[in-house]
Image (cartoon, rainbow, N blue to C red; front, top):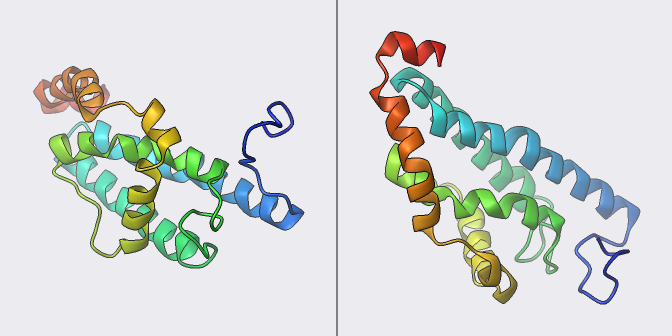
Length: 159
């Protein structure tokens, strides 16, 4: 992106080491965070939902401790500059109200850095310009979540 839009602020790190770290965390967002979020939300019965809750909570704690706790020396994942890592995680935090409403979930108290990061990111003018309101996700996912919860347990396992 930085090469295509050089006039905009850079969202990729400059050093090779920082680029490698960014790739690892973007991969974490795509291969661990997103699947855990979806598994939790789309659990077809209480057992699947609880397994999804445990996995999602584990990923949140990993991001808190290994990501923001070890690599970040600023308000964003890679320090004081908003980056593609932040952009990779952001949309899923925007969807947290869905988990709150349909799965009675809030960020664990053991994630203060993650909560602080989320507050800083959502207050950014650039994020506010593209943010969807909570109602957007709640309405668009309500019918899907309700359909899953209304299936008989035998059908839920096959759906």
